[in-house]
Length: 167
Length: 259
Image 1 (cartoon, rainbow over the protein chains, first blue to last red):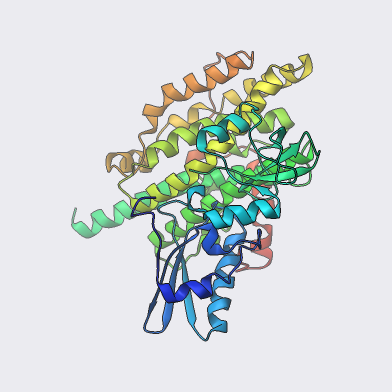
Image 2: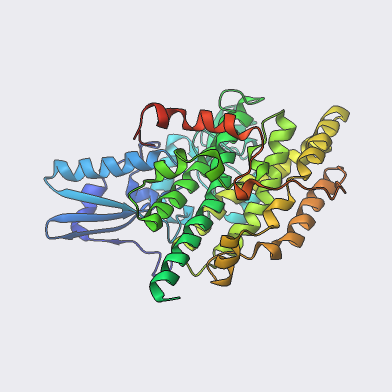
């Protein structure tokens, strides 16, 4: 991660931001998701800059409302601004977030080249979050939310979501 | 020409230029959205509506920017939803109906190849907002391009019937492809400023890429040199009015309803 990609979040704001879950994957926080790029408090007002995962993700508005509500509970006013640049990438998902996501039943994104092999070449590389087998196949490139693809495990036969690599 | 006039002309061109980009995605997004609950299978239904969602998300960024440039109190919703038919400047291709799944895929494929090449160039725009939207959108559009190219191959190189249907759709929609490469005055002015993309330079690469996929799909590359145009000047096909009636219904029935 380059210096430019590193989020600018003031230390004392972490504990509040950690409590705001992703509306679609409630086991991870917005911090784990990597969408919060800036959080600074100036004269009692918290200014947040957030980047959407996908342009049309309907969860974006909910995230913004949830952040404001979390700060309001602490007696603080938060202003959330949506920024597009630099664009969000799955590299910004935290390791902790990836681990929790897998436990929740969503397979973690592979590297860019492996992701292509899987989505285009039909290779079997995605690990089933239920049984751990890599004997899995793509059902649909587009899944229940813009960021996920739909897979099925050939061993335990369970369908599951795969978080697509976005670079 | 004094600076003020020059500045207002630049803003006028920029506003029109943003609409030239955004209207394509809005109208195509509406067409794909029509398949919600009507896709040929659950997976393709979800894919088409996901693609629609990406496009509508992208146009929100464009229309918000257009509203800022216009600076006359109109919002993104006003610009997206409350213009008359003649004020929409999308190409004719994107308003063509979902005749069958082959048409839906062919239309989107013929757009995706253009969209991908176009956004790749727009990333280099001197206008930082347009460059940022392009960079963000490009990641999503690369998924769309994969999806439609894949279906072109599956149906083209599938059964006799799917091959025939795909060929018919490609042959019919081919006449709408040349319009992309006829620049409007706003497109010319913005390309000269380094803000817009010189679309004429994309033409060869476009037809090369499209032909490559069609050949892999065992489909014939149409040879017809007759092309329809007019959408970019606001002169639309008979399908556009019906599409707008549905698109604008909510906003006209409940004014100021928010997205």
